[in-house]
Length: 131
Picture 1 (cartoon, one colour):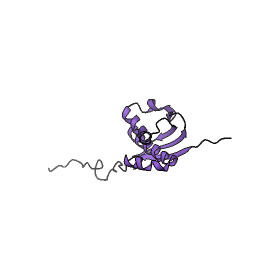
Picture 2 (cartoon, rainbow, N blue to C red; picture 1 turned 90 degrees about the vertical axis):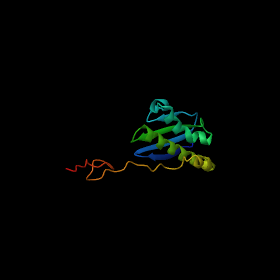
Picture 3 (cartoon, helix red, strand yellow; picture 1 turned 30 degrees about the vertical axis):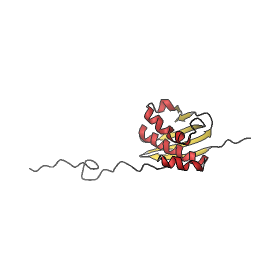
C-alpha cells in the first residue's frame, strides 16, 4: 500500500488558529469543508493565503485542507498563510530563504490589549467631571 506524503502544520494570528494538511495534488484548497473562494470571498484574503505558494512557485502542486477556528476572516487568513509557509518548509528546507525574505515565517505578535479595571476599555478612561 503506497503511502502519500502528507505535511501538517499550524499557524496562528490574533485568536485564530489554522491547522493544515498538505498533500501533493492539483491545487485544490478546502477550508472547514467549504471551497476556498466561498470561505474567503475577497481577493485580498485569498491572495494572503496563496502568498507562500506563489513565493515558493508551487501554486498548483499541492492540495490543501485547512481547519480554521477562532477570530474573524482576516485573522484566519493570516493564520492559514503562516501554516502554509510552515508546511512548505517541511516539503523543502531550501524554500526558507524566499519565504523568510517575504516575511512569511514570522508570526504576527499583535494581540488585542486587555481591558483594565477602573476604566471602560483597554485605553479609554471614564469621563472626567471637574464639578
